[in-house]
Length: 463
Image 1 (tube, rainbow, N blue to C red):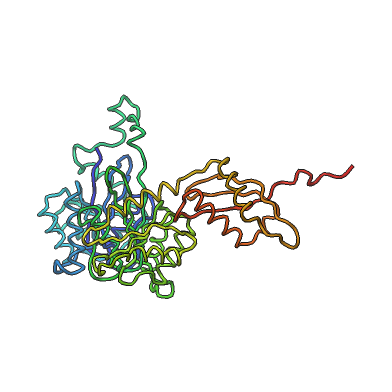
Image 2: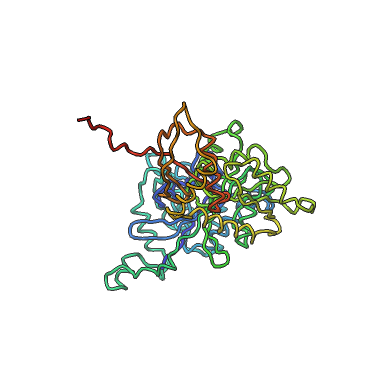
């Protein structure tokens, strides 16, 4: 069985750095500024032959429950409750602080097996702070440097001695199966979840919406704008279908992005868009279709992701007949490059419209993966050429020969023709729109590449 480890400690002791080290890649945001991490983040980790789930948490501070720090503390306490083992980090260079002692009392009350880790122990400055760790009464501190990867062998030994008896390493699993790898899961059980990124301007209600989908307060929310910093991935099962939903930081106009930390958060959100299959762009119903909303939608289209527009905070709007129809017409007018994009009115606060939103996600994902037969495409090409032939350029006629679809995700078509560079953009748009209408691809990015046929007589000399 696998087991779970929560990394806890006061702000700026290196929790996210250790998380990234054990995860084997840069997943969590890391900066010298205290309090970078706010939500708890889970990931797959490995230390030697031990494979386990690791949870990164926010630094604990004394504060009222209703404050932002208090809500962050509640997230950390939830991570401790879910963990089998706790990594308690202290700063070996700073020594023991009152915050560390407060954390120690909290961990004693939980009764969780705890490993005391003195991070930043490299060099001479870390020695004294490491020995101070004995005063906390949690056993011998394990001196490491998460940034440089030092001391991980000692951490392995400590974890091996502390981990739950029910947990086993991959080697143990091999022994149970006669020295062979465990049998693979059935194909149906291994079906990959649909990857979703929820994006939008700050305070559009992204985290609130995801919490409502999950049915629990998994992500940190509140009235403050810009609470989310990391792109947090959470698994979701909706009506028997698996999803992996990424909550992201709010995207402001580039000119308004200030400071290294916000730039890192924006880069993390953009990375989530690139690795998503479907992007839900949440738009505040009270100020719908602002310029930044259109820029984000255009970015998603350029990245080739499937897009669903969620008009959030619909509960704040007065009920008016035809209101959502007007928004769909507005979306088609402003986003002509993805005409027909799904527009769904939702409320993350009340849960209204979530069934329609997830149905739209599944439908657009199917269209994003759609493939059209080559014979159907070429019959279509004959029809569109008969209805609207390509214009002559410089007195010479353009000839479009045949078309095929070599890829999906998004649908990509290659049209073989003469003088590909001479085909006007307006005619290319006509072809894309005709593809969208004829093969029922509303709202999906379409890639149309014009390619010249090879000249069979090129390079041959006359006889």
